[in-house]
Amino acid sequence: RIAKLHDTDLLPNNVNGWENSRAFLQQVVDILYDYIKEEHKRSTKVLDFHQPEDLKKMIDLKIPEKPMNLQELLESCEQVLKYSVRTGHPRFFNQISCGLDLVSMAGEWLTATANTNMFTYEVAPVFTLMEHEVIRRMIDLIGWGPNEGDAIFTPGGAIANMYAVNAARHYHFPGIKAQGMSDKLCIFTSEAGHYSIKSAAAVLGIGTDRCFHIPTDDIGRMDPEALERKIEECKREGLQPFFVCATAGTTVFGAIDPLQKIADICKRQKTWFHVDAAWGGGLLLSPEQKPKLAGIERANSVTWNPHKLMGALLQCSACFIRHDGLLMDTHQMAADYLFQKDKQYDVKYDTGDKAMQCGRHNDIFKLWLMWRSKGMEGYRRQVNDLMDMATYFTDRLKATEGYEVIIDKPEYLNVSFWYVPPSIRHLDDKEKYARLETIAPKIKAKMMERGTTMVGYQPDGEKPNFFRMIISNPGTTKADLDFLIDEIADIGKD
Ligand code: ABU
Image 1 (cartoon, helix red, strand yellow):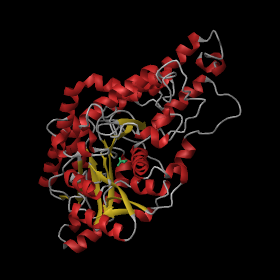
Image 2 (image 1 turned 90 degrees about the vertical axis):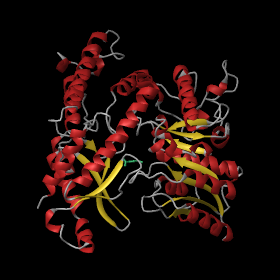
Image 3 (image 1 turned 120 degrees about the vertical axis):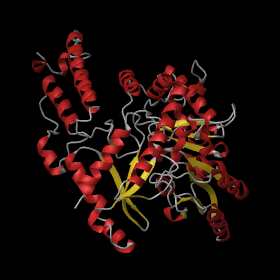
């Protein structure tokens, strides 16, 4: 019967269309149920990879002139899922965001159903209060006082970092908001810091040449002495350093910069201290792991992405600013069609004018619901278990012939390693590392063809291409980690 129906037979186009609507939605949900069930089976492939030109021929993506019927739409849904990467599969290790938390997913379904905009209390009353509550909880975990801090949920950690740079600039140079920038400002992050800091320098008119990348030690942590030397050198050259980004959990190695030392430098040099804890912020949920982030409580701003370690569905990122009122001062445009001052409620609950964007997605409900489902105890256990898994995986690599770990004791959940095929194991280091450059890409290509698992690779400075394993899906077991080790060795054997 669905094949005879079109969207004109559904609510709201057909005022009597409830039964049709229910039947259609039920079938969509059945497709999603099947997908979720299959995704969690080890026998299911992580992906069914095809080259772009082939995939274009296999899947109909055209926008038609004539309406498609509901059966055709259901088939489209099935087809799209068939060729999508199963990021919730317990053997998907390719990205920092992985896994599929079903409570968070249920939250996303409700969010889509409520379909509101987060800019004003009048259209998002419950979600606004919920956001306020969760922000206060996260500020408490960061370690700021009860009267300190504000935050904005953003479309990703890169934008959260840009918010921090912009707020810092407004704090130090408030005139720029109206008059534009004539001063020579400069900012700092480490060589392993996220590229979004450089991108913020480009977007905000600071200039990428004035985003300085400070060298790191052998496990990817910023060298604080080099930072202070560079800040002083910039001052001597007439630049105005105002912002330092330390990273808690770098993208490739998961390194945590020496936050206390960097906080001391920022204090001495009178610069803003930002901590990009997009990835590492989740460690604050474990009393056992939290000491690794000691010093974060001294930050002027923090980026923290619950869609990473906390496992909230994409996207869920936030920028926290310690100085209450600064987000509003920095971004407020006071559009009087949205933010009327004479509304019948306390307009401090209209959060939209703190944001660079106007329309803002509801990213809070899925986080709030999942956090309630785990409680603080559940997250503590989840984070600690993942850390144990990363140790297990590192030890297994070290004990397995053909594998070389890059960092002997990773600080976090990134485990980087080379697989060295038997034919080049006897070579001296220089020749071996030269040959290794092509090994990881070749193994990755075959891995994608097999579709059995997925893990990322990259070079880093002098280091030839290596695999970067991310262990952040609570559904992953030790047997899945063992599988990856065997699979790479099987694909990579000569
Ligand atoms: N900052 C985005 C991280 C992307 C990834 O490596 O999964």
